[in-house]
Length: 74
Image (cartoon, rainbow, N blue to C red; front, side, top):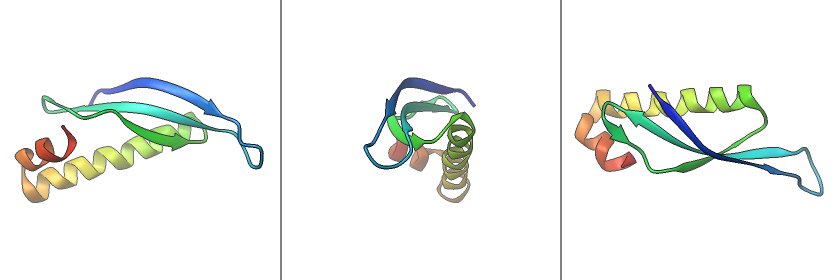
């Protein structure tokens, strides 16, 4: 399943560790999602969070069908 990484910006808060805001778009069975942000610590965190988002999409398709996926993410 292709994922488009649109933009990544590094955030350096005064208190706490730096993190990144990744703007991503998921392509699923001909449906292209809206661009949405993910707050991540590093590349591994990004991969794990994308796996969670993709699993959510697959679960919605399983339970409600592809039209509901299209309605929710597009």
